[in-house]
Length: 168
Ligand SMILES: [Zn+2]
Image (cartoon, rainbow, N blue to C red; front, side, top):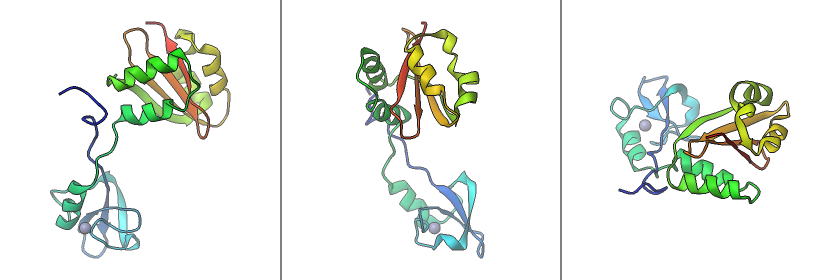
C-alpha cells in the first residue's frame, strides 16, 4: 500500500477515567465518558484507556471513533501557513511522501535553541530560525528527515512557522 495521509491516519486515543465509586475504567471524552458518565464523577489517569479491561460500552465507542491524522499530516497542515518559498515546497513534498519525523518538542525558546535547534548546522533559513527562537515564549520545533539534509521547523503559538535546513 502506498503511503498517504489517508493510509497513515491513526486510531483515536482516549485518556483513562476511573469511576471512583465502582473502580471501572472508562474512556474520557470532553465532559462525559464515551458511555455518557459525567466526568466530574471520575478521576483522569495519565495512561490511555485500555479497551480490554475497561467499560465495554466505552470500548465499542472508542473503536468506532474517527481516526486521527498522522504526525506528518498535522505538521503538513501547519507548514502550509509558512511563507511561500522553495524550501516550504520541499518540506511539503517530503511530508506528503511520509518522511520520518524527529523531535516534535514544545518548550521555552531559549532551551529549545540551546538543546535542539543546532543552528550551527543549519545551511538554509538560518536567520529566520534564529529570529523565531529569539523569544522567551514557548516554541515547537520539528525535524523532517530528508536525504538532502533534514528540515527544521520552528513555530511559536499563533505565529507563522519558519523553516530551515541542516547540511545533508
Ligand atoms: Zn464507559
